[in-house]
Image (cartoon, rainbow, N blue to C red; front, side):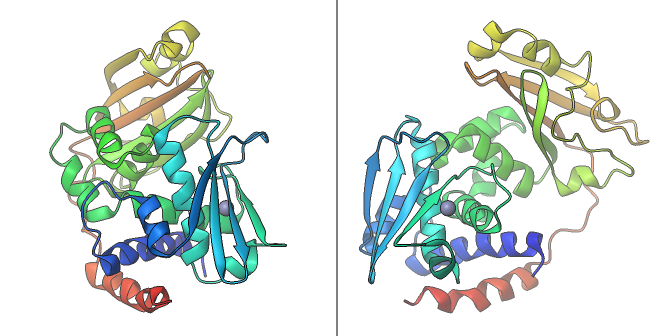
Length: 293
Ligand SMILES: [Zn+2]
């Protein structure tokens, strides 16, 4: 199975689970879902850096421990949802639990396929596509919509931004950077409709002269959560051959020097065909019986 396909399935299986359980409203409560499966969930300060949580197994009993060293509710809920991914996704329990315990690093920071699948399951569980879209459509596109949906779903701003680029009905791109150097970049399908774009790679610099780059250059402003906005040419960020205006919004994410940049355009890619819903429905149905444990 291709990686992209397996990650899509992981998200859709989370959405199918919500449907099965009749959980159609936001926010989704991963603690309640765990309780409904008699999984004991406990928070614990984690000494080891980067560990987000654990899935424990004793016979047929399961437990989840989530790290509390990061105080953010969004982070903790994502961590619990990630462990639920290991519990629900086919093959995970046997693969990831060694000696009764699995240790996770959630949050799209690894290349381990099981960890990534669990992350995508968590994204689908906490931010199911249809209610997510319906909610973001109520706001002006870009950072405002992302902040609103993050608070509505009780997720981190970063997780909401990635999901926005994935399912939003607008050309967009999300760039996360630290100290002016790109950590990762997500580009929406509509944005990808422009020919010959060159995506920013991990380790490259933010475009010189951009407001994101100016913000990143001042750690005090980043720490203070300062935000900048500008109308720019998409070619300044991604090259290509099409002149098109995009809105660039940059926000400082606190003391780690991280800046989130959101690029949006309400014009680019609007003539693209929508997703084939029938195909998606088949995928959901073929995975649904797995949850009848
Ligand atoms: Zn994990």
